[in-house]
Length: 144
Image (cartoon, rainbow, N blue to C red; front, top):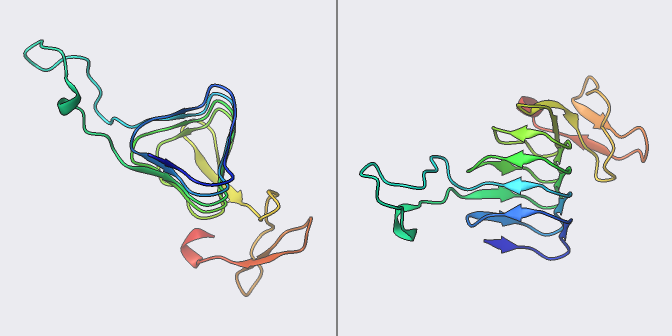
């Protein structure tokens, strides 16, 4: 586990072994970044699991991403650069760069500007403009 520089982790955050946070990540109150895809307290024979029995899945929250309070991120998930996860979302799939996801399960609802606001619809050239600060982004076609 690595937590980058200038990250902000609010009260009650759980970042379990296997998750890495790049610089500038925000995790709201009670966010959980989970790490085991098939958790069990015991082995099939009934014996307690030891440290060697656990295999943590690697997960990543990339540069500048924000995860809202109460969200749960399942094992092995990548949250892309500058993405936004809504409060109480349950993230079951990777989130694209700048993606905004909400709900249970989390679904893509738009794309985020560096200022944190929702980008406008793509124009004819594929560019998206922030209605607040005016920044323009050319996102890959498969992520629009």
